[in-house]
Length: 573
Image (cartoon, rainbow, N blue to C red):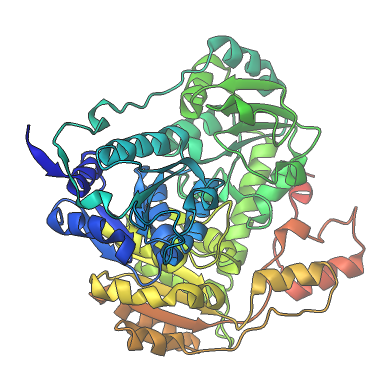
């Protein structure tokens, strides 16, 4: 029977599953796999990052953007341990990632060898599958099982590979089971759908809240919203599913959020919660609202709000079927007030588009981003105030894509995520948005963007502070401490790493810099010096006369420059 190198057999399994690139940094304990990747380099591209964490974050971003398994590796010891942060990002956002770990030779294991670690316990919590390969013959099989587990359980699969196994010859056989991989739609039970209709028909102030479970189904969301005259709110990770300027779309809830969405959800008498596991529901949803929840995972029912009717099944299918089953609800004062609320919100934020004050506000920067963005652009937002500003001010059209580190919310995901996006979509325009804190954590991998000629536009919002945490310290009325940063010229940093670099300190510099960035064929770093001012805290508005004094309301409006933006309750009067 024909023989094949075990490492090559393993890489063939990767190829069969559609993995066309893998991130990592080589090490002595990973040399057999590096040799296999060299021999199979036309099928699976090795992407050299400058820190393993960047590779893991990029692999997670691959999975978020495509739904396909991302792949990364680290050598024994420090190479493996550096992966942890990015793997937790994948785990907590429920996306499939394969992590290969180097290990010393099987003959050296348990001898306290150089860089030998007992890696299985380290990765037990982050993984849905965690195995050490025990024989050369089992290597491709274990990889195949790992990928299946990552897809099935939407998580991280970890395989530790003793370095000597990949050099061995094994019998050639068809191992990969990718051709048999299937996914399907769970159809909602008609009885459950019909049981929910009386709740919908009795509601006076309903809101549809969507998550990632309805991705790619704006037509179903729109049809449901307009049939039942129901405004729509979304989770941050669902940004882009609904065009941001759709008249019934209120934006996002909680702190990384918009005023209209928070106000509507606080006053709703019915929330139709579809395809989401929004973690702040009990803080921002009206606790007395009736609640219909649709999900493919029954374990999520009731986790975020008491449920009056659960529907196990595909969210988009449920929305379409309700339109067929339910009586149309005419547009009423509730819908019209919410539409006016979101129009006022957009007008208010756009009123700062031409603000020339220095340091700059965020709005003029996003005005330029929206101006140069292509119809199918991909956006990767880092974590902090930059996420908040991105979800408020990016005017996505339904064709563009957006991702960030959602549940894990790790800073530093912007630059690696951009690498993933540009490798996956080489013909699309890619932006990354980072604060100066997050950018400094992974800016070394701008070199990776340069090495692979990835024309990513990296925008850095420099306020010399961890602004999001600064606001939290303000809320707890403590002395601000540990949140202020030493400034740097990140435009010059970008140039030193081989990218086009711009440092913006005045409004007049914005348009030429972004125009040049759009035309560049190289990576670009645009460092914009912005005010260290808190964005409007829509999670703690002080605008309602029933709750706050005239003096408190006026002080709040003056601090955050609120104008021409009445509350939802005022609009309903």
